[in-house]
Image (cartoon, rainbow, N blue to C red; front, side, top):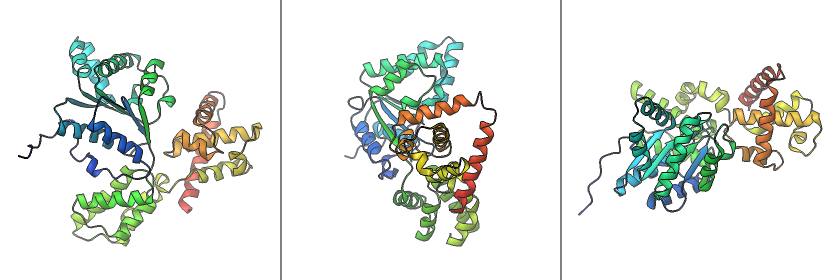
Length: 352
């Protein structure tokens, strides 16, 4: 007899499942690790730390783990955003109900906490998270975190907490390539019961390279137009309705090469100088500034940025970012310079 389907988990989205997660080169390792964890939680790969830029599918992957475990076992699953975790922590402190908080989060079988970077500079909740972390792991239960950066780039976090993050498996999600973007749009449209011509899917896949969230947002705009107006989506309609998205800086297939060209021109040096080994001051500062703008304007990780700058490691990139941040206090013109360069990058990207 077929096993009856469970009620949907109240904290998890029913569409955030593995079957609707399009796997490509950008997320293959992360997705397969998540599937392995969902089938055998609390054993290997614990804690599981997923990081990457906004809209790349971190929450989808995390909740897919939760949905699978909830549906296929009797294990208790809790999904919580960092904001909700913090708010509940504060309410329990003020209400003298910390025992309830500890019992809830320390005795769970699967704990999913989203966007932990927001715990930065909050020592009280970090202290509680540390003890929660230890309790869950010591009971051989599963923890999954998402974050917008790797543990090594987290600032204003206790060292012992970062050490705990580093104990498990860390995976990063990168912006999807064209083929994956095409597959995501096609699959999402089919799940919505909407017909979108391949030429329109091709247009979206080429024009929107930043992240999955922006892709789906553009698709939803077209589907809403078709439903409200009672018209089929054509290439012309897509170009008209999404022209603002296509011309925005975030959606101009922004590459690090574009940023390098702008900064190199501004400082009258070459792109090869930025990528090379020279360490004269007239090159080191523009190089550090270029890395900083790459981190600000793109979804690339520090590892990818370092690789693009002559194969440097991520620690060099982090050092460069810190150097630029430190200069804000002593260089009153730096912020204006960066704003000018960013505007020039947007203008150049829009022409490409």
